[in-house]
View 1: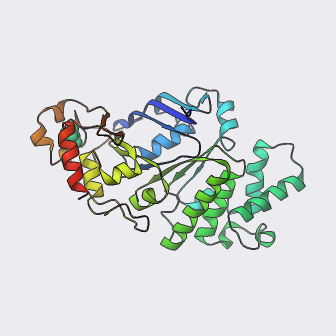
View 2: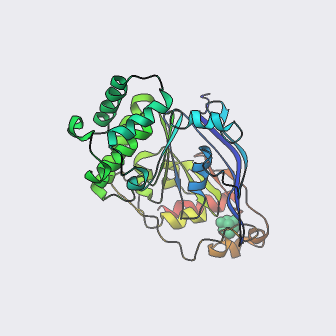
View 3: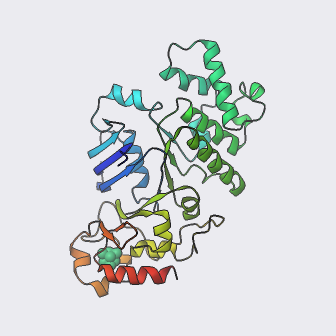
Length: 339
Ligand code: SF4
């Protein structure tokens, strides 16, 4: 059995706000292996970004309460010391965000920014070594004429080139895990494909794992092996990408997939809008948080509005679903959704 690079167990994250307690993430557990790409999909406010940023302990503001564990290469990122977290950020886990411009310092050259990220974990590297590593990264991420562009500023680059530089900064210390939060959302479609290809080719070099947060099921189909579907701060379906597209097992996933079509790696599909609005994370409904939008809740009965459904294995494809419907019903309806 291959051991997991990352193991998240019973993660709960809440924020105390003047309006009440925001239950951003509830009872989330999953694993990621070396070389694996895990997609996390869901509407905004579903908990996907908070889940990911917890792994880097970026939610440690005074109003946040985090419980559970997130063990990365043997270290629990939620309970280790601040110094240990800092030592692991960049060298073991790095994050790329949606907006490359806000991730870069406009006053420093891109070469300086990549070099400084490298020096955090290589304080004894000589100037020449740092320069060599910077040029190597610029070449790896496909910046043309790196010897000239290394001394330019972020505003002198296009959006796609800036995201390549952000990826260079994230990967300069060869992390074992890259967390990419909507890394291509701000880019046009052609550039999106180039950035995804770049991430996959860099991943292949050192068996890096990737957690890809996206609202785009087409991107998940293209690059991920496994996927978590999140709703109301919980995982409602956990499956391989093939299983999710061939036989989805949760009514929310059925809604999302309705307009995407078959698993075609050339197709891109935005999540379909499911009728209704996501629940407030301050006043989550009792029972299944999807119940107010679920067309099957009436037929299943009051359990949907009284008891939170736990993830359970459904069918023979290894999928897990958090729904009170019987296995038979789920398999029957799920197969029709994809028919
Ligand atoms: Fe719908 Fe009930 Fe299943 Fe929730 S538990 S998804 S309300 S059928």
